Amino acid sequence: MTYKVRLTRDAQEDVRELFDFLLHRELTRPGGGDLRVADKAIAALENGFATLQSSPFTCRKASNNPLLRELIVPFGATGYVALFEITDSQTVTIAAVRHQRESDYH
Image (cartoon, rainbow, N blue to C red):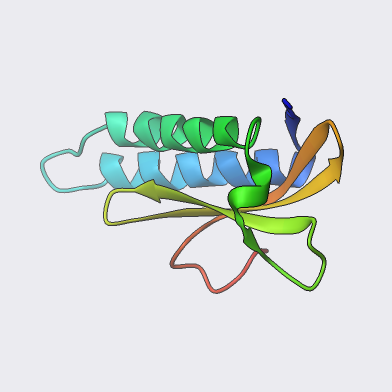
């Protein structure tokens, strides 16, 4: 079975904010940083999201609702967490994305 993966507007905004944060961080490093880091982070997220097309039930449960789950996306020494719901038998909806060091979804 293949699921269609979609991101809510909030999740899309989360991804943009993560990208902007990394880009800004690298631009302000003394001596300049690696501007490819932000692109690599987005690629890691996209690869993680792609795994949801075939195996969303392998991700950890996020609540008592068995259809609400979290995807862990490794990146560097930490990574990201994507909150998603298995909406129906054909669709996975990503509701939010955060850095693992953030206290919760916003």
